[in-house]
Image (cartoon, rainbow, N blue to C red; front, side):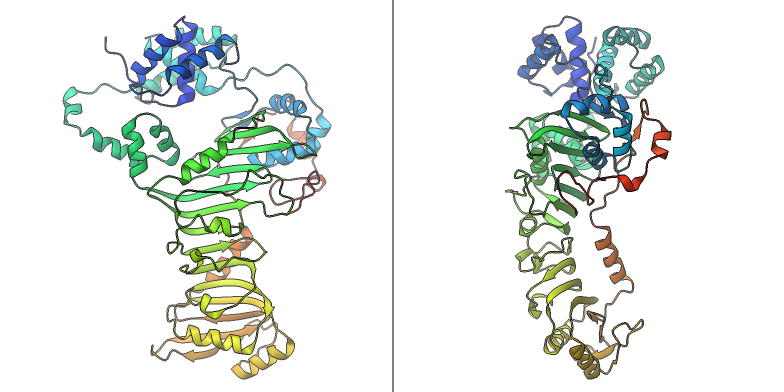
Length: 544
């Protein structure tokens, strides 16, 4: 009989597969051979299988989701109530930590405090991938859905998947989602396997590429050589939160939970819709490894790179730095509140747009800035050297020095040599006398608060029909060039206002096993001490 071949290389599912083989009495060596025959590639080494079997025998691996807080985007009240008292963490701090994962008010600090803690025995929460792997093993052995359902129930001690769910999983297997479907051998003979592997890599997201790179030498070579395009990459190092988010549904995050001495005791982890808590391992920083692996992918192009770091002086998380040592990245648009370190990640001459989300000084003397076309910045620029800005087609920023009439005219003369200018505005300190002089010289006669200011117009000497416009109003010096786009300045202001607000990946819910909806309706948001990123955190004395 031909042994079926796996179309699934998910390590969590295959751990459940190995657990099933162990329960059936196979040795680690025979289980390794069985899995290798099933996957046709080494997903786990023999050493890794032996270690897993040792954990099963010591009952440290039993398919349960250790420290589970949420699974498949649903939080468990009992899990929250059981795990957090072990950390010695106050409810208001827990509320702050959880909100960084839920992006909502699932567990208000008041609800957590009033409801009290349920210190019952730990919940028997099983990881769904492990259960699916267990069932997959039984399916390969030609067990029926009914037989598999009973065997799973015997192992777990109670129903963890209904018979209907088991049947649905068996239907998925029949459709080829976990086991390759049989094809005519002539079809395989006609296929160009290397070309097929290239197509697989080309269509894979970054998470799948990482998995493929761990399977065999050819996939590892292809993941390093084939081009990859990422629309959005978010990287966060902020108050103990390390998070990486990409285009696909891959979202990984780690939140360090510290005591008042800023010593890390526990970490909350997230992998897509699963959230769990575990004791801190001082020597392991898996999130850093994930970020470094992504950034070191050759031939990668990123349209939008978001880098958020803690810029406050109360920086205790020394290992949440941005020490990236790989080749500069091909990034089109950079959004960051970081200092010069983030700019060093980017290939000079490739960067087109910079959105600087820090009110401190912007670092515009970097080589990466020199070829950019768009600058949108909260930062104050100290040195306003005209030649440093003439490469920009659109700009909005502020300076912390007083402007002079001569400097404005210098900008005007420079822009008259730039027919592709769209819009250029900077905020600055303008004395009353200088404001009146500028408007008199320009013939615009604007007041400080003119709703519809007058614009001075200047003809381009070498481009007939093209006009440069200039006005000084409020605290702004404002230019509009021949390529002016109505509404672009308003969109830029909105980008700064939004900052690092991220789209939520999935909608987390609660099982409401302890705290009811009535508790939530009685909650007064104004009494919240900490609501996550960018708000008050009294425990650590920080306010964004």
